[in-house]
Image 1 (cartoon, helix red, strand yellow):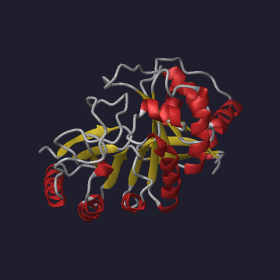
Image 2 (cartoon, one colour):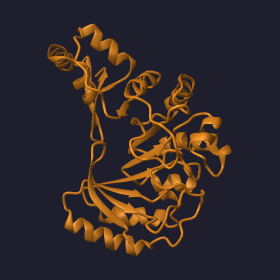
Image 3 (cartoon, rainbow, N blue to C red):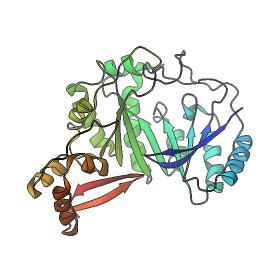
Amino acid sequence: MNIIFGPVPSRRFGLSLGIDLSPGSKACNFDCLYCELSAAKPTDTIPNPPNVEEVIAETKKALAEHPDTEVITITANGEPTLYPNLNELITALQAIKDRRKLLILSNASTIDDPKIRQALAKLDIVKLSLDCATKRCFKRLDRPMDADKLNAIIAGMQEFRQIFSGMLVIEILVVRGINDTDAEFEALADVLKKIRPDRIDIGTIDRPPAYAVQPVPFARLSELASHLQGLPVHIVAKRPKATPQHFSREDILALLSRRPLTQEDIDTLLDAASKERLSRLVAEKRVHKERVGSVLFYKLGA
């Protein structure tokens, strides 16, 4: 079984070594329309999962071969929190990670389970998916085993935030005609303000999906992100070529009052003179910089 893959460079998290806890076949309790894996009936069990000792041995070997690894990423061909020995594995990985960060990529389906929350709280970075804040959207897009579970998942995220001191990233993947509405993002905004993630990554389909669904353009992602006022949003999508614009100091402060901007936003939006004004605002402590993972944000205040 190919348990380890990479390392691969990630713009969001750094040089990442992956651990696949379901190397034999897809094992997921969702059947998301946009999944890059083949369509499959949802399940809550990983068949023939690798044992902890095997995973640790392979991870040690890979780390010795790739000492520059920055992040060890727990993932799966499906949902990694279905792994039956997750808590034991995370504890063992902590013992060998050295300076590296431990990250998990999860669909959040099990975050309502206190045992899962306690296990994930040991990690440095937790990325949870939340594509919808309404049951109808959740059922259509993520196609979970239990469509009535959305409220429990959201409540579980809020409870997890209370015990987790690491970096919490929420990912929203936007699909045309399903969760690309103003109403859905207004509902998401209400939920996300209660969860208080360190970063929100908004993206769309960029690989062949399991089902015949379509991405949304960058401009629409930007419009939807505007509903998440005051929240640290990172739009993870290819940006169209654009001519940087002139912004006064007041314009820059007004932009940042709506939501923090990433370095990528700044490079796209601001011309050279505007960037100089932003630098002065940083020097004056009217604006401050904060790095969340590999993403640099500009925010109002000290």
